[in-house]
Length: 545
Ligand SMILES: *Cc1c(COP(=O)(O)O)cnc(C)c1O
Image (tube, rainbow, N blue to C red; front, side):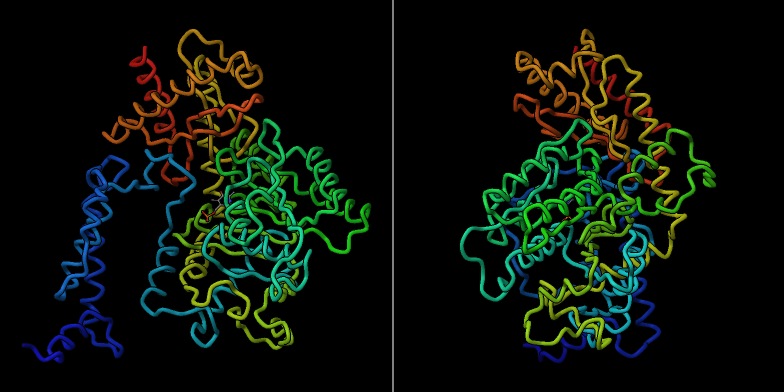
């Protein structure tokens, strides 16, 4: 039998000391260092930590809360072990997905709140960390062309959360009072492109609209919404007397970096409001969780080109800027600092062009709008979450302050330069076809074919002609096998980890088109690793002969 006080005194050492105790403070820092040291020991030339090992979920079912206490040291080992097999996103041999390697200030922005645990629910519980949220919101709003004095923003649980906010706000605009009364009668619809992220449907389902009330509009080969079809579809919906809760513009599609024409979408929306004399304005949301960061090029002088980007890069950046510079036309914008802002997960914010829009989501509408007037900062009145971590805004603040516009321009410019180099080399290969050659981001989709295929003609035919369906499926399978071989090689430390998308788009006759995908996100990416992708694919092609 042990008096609990004995346990308590042991446990107290497992917490940071409330009053500085230099010896213990040092031990705490040392515990962090030890954990990091152990992770560092797992690094090799390979783009993964430690050994790739099977993830044994059957064993996880056996996990139980232990009866007895453990030590910081033992738990630390166990936690580090859980990182084994993780891809190192910042490794130049990793070109996997739109997952950015976090920069050190971004990491500190997550670590510090983990220690002092601010809760953004209220100013009282977060103090200066609440200020960090307000600062990041203003910085980003201005970057994207909003007026920080009029706009507002809140951090939430991911890009999906930003869409949930946008669609909820749209519902409230088209059906005022539903925050209290719920929805009755015919449900409004949400409209987006067929390349929009599935999170639009997730949000619609969870909000009770149902995913069937998300209407998707076909995209052009450059993965942007066909605005003429958007217009005719909206007109059809409005003629039927249905309401449009939200139009989502995707500013950077997940697989291809397609960018919708927000400018045209905005113009179509406005003219339909006028034409149908609507008693509301359909909410226009920009899902810019990927594309927002390119706002740093809004005021880059492309002629002067002080950063001396190569011509092709310059063209690609200008091609993106051409669309991204219109972000301010959207009523709201979703931003993921954890996708293209070099911050760790979760760091996402929802922005509204007019701050008062957020009042529509307030819990109690009878309360006079308190925000931006009383000077009080209590986003907990309208945020979906109650407790909200301070790590999102602190991580974003750390990253934005470190990088500044110059740093973001440098990193994005480098990633795009690497992607352009890859495209150049892929296009030069007689048996490879780049599938998103008209998109200008860090992601490249491509299909690999056996020797005898004419890649000048064939990709077009299999896209458009249903007679080619059997061969399309055959080459889908071929690409899967190339992917597996390239992947296996990458895990062995020779080659590059890329990924595969099962359906980056559909053929005109409704079949999925598989593509290999290189998403370059590492500041350490370099020419030699671009060549390594080509070499690895070529070895795979030879093996499949
Ligand atoms: C990733 C992504 C989302 C979802 O964002 P999360 O942060 O992963 O929740 C939404 N839209 C687009 C275009 C995305 O790429």
